[in-house]
Amino acid sequence: MDTEKISRAVPKGLGVKGNSRAAVVVPLILGEKKEEILFTKRTDWLDEHPGQMSFPGGRYEQKDKILKRTAIREAGEEIGIQAHEIEFIGQLNECETITKYTITPFVARIPDREYDRNEEEVAEIVRYPIEALIAGDCFEWKEHTNGKETILLPYFYIEEDTIWGATARILVQLLEITTEWKY
Image (tube, rainbow, N blue to C red):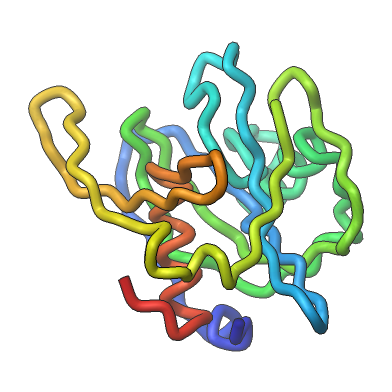
């Protein structure tokens, strides 16, 4: 994984007015022998995106002042990571959710350790090897209908989990920029 490409990337904003703002940390665990991405599985009782795979993050609050602080605060709340443990590498393009959020993804290196999930929001913390995510048989594009509109969305199937929606779109960006992965 070539993270230097992320640090040189110039992210694109969507310029969508009226959407709620959110930010996520795309957490990379990069060791000499393994490269992994950390995901959270949301609890089934959350109002938005229940049970879905996601990156740690959430809704912008005025006290955050900037979206990077939103990502830090939310990651701390969800997986118990401290701000000083997050080594930011760069930022990916913003992406919009079907629930009218504009998400700003910040790619960061985090320590290889156990994390403490917030049981109210996070059902499980999952780490997947980048090698497994770029394997040819775990990815496909599928049609998704939202109201009157049908769009193509990326889906990753890994072990018993399905990664789709905004999380999968962010993951596609990351893998396209940092690896030789072609879908």
